[in-house]
Image (cartoon, rainbow, N blue to C red; front, side, top):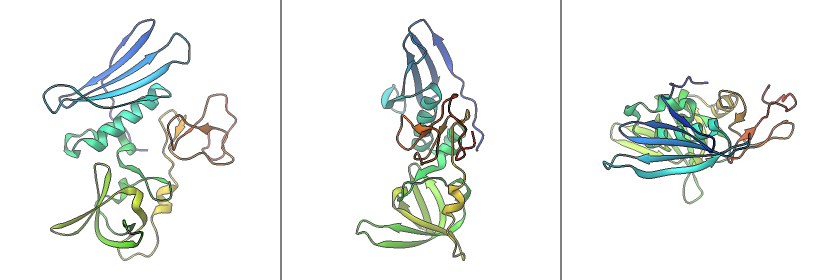
Length: 219
């Protein structure tokens, strides 16, 4: 799992509400935890500052503080230009996308490689693209020559192989199922045999401390 940079949170708490704020010159991220019970309600929001003043950009409820962090930093890493450096705070979340068959894959190891990519176009036909693999915000790009770049939504990806290779590389990317650092939330659909349960966010599985050992996720 890619190591993430530490976020310099400004934490404020009182008996009813706790908040964590991360402010940069480009945005403000705020996470709220509300409630008197052990099980608190979490929400996160991002305000964009590119116009000179904070403007609501994205927000959502989440199951925990870590789930809030993961959701917020993924949006930031995929929304702001790579050269600003915010992908370092998201780790593998910055390069993980869902393809046509529902699998969530981390494409980090393919960046800069020559590949052959098979994509489903709007007419339902498969198209082959040969070129240099990269990621731009929420899309995959293939640079086919010096002046031509094709943009492919991840959900249209059918297959990818290395240049001059016939074997798909998707299975090798699938083997490494991504999770939060505490190994409680895994970024894939729930499968039979898993001792956890479908997570609060779609496409996630949650494991609690009292769950039986899970042979699928090895926790």
